[in-house]
Image 1 (spheres, rainbow, N blue to C red):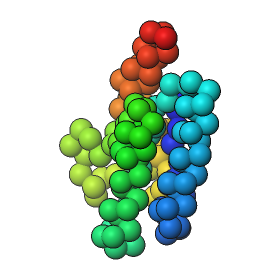
Image 2 (tube, helix red, strand yellow):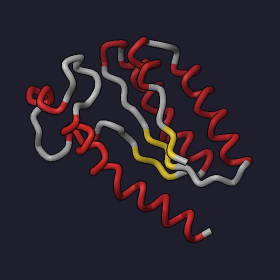
Image 3 (cartoon, helix red, strand yellow):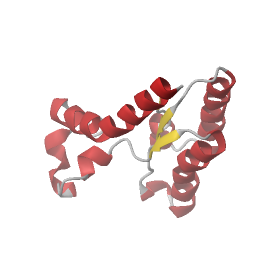
Length: 126
């Protein structure tokens, strides 16, 4: 199971405790069903303040540790890696500036690939 959510909550400034609770419920159910999980995190920008960012950013690593899941810390890491300057991110984003375009999706998938392969290996080992 691959789980990533919370991006819309973060963009709307929803209390990180709410996002954490929702993810906790999903991971609790996955654990009860003995499903291996890859948790894909998000990182908050600083526009809601450093306290919000710290609370939100801690959700994914803490839950991954609690539920012993695989963790890919940042869904958008593939867009930031590879030396692309922040000013050039528009080349991999849709006009809304929020969602990746086709090239951006390719980069996200390429960055996630090794973690997905680790999840598959975990499933095959069980």
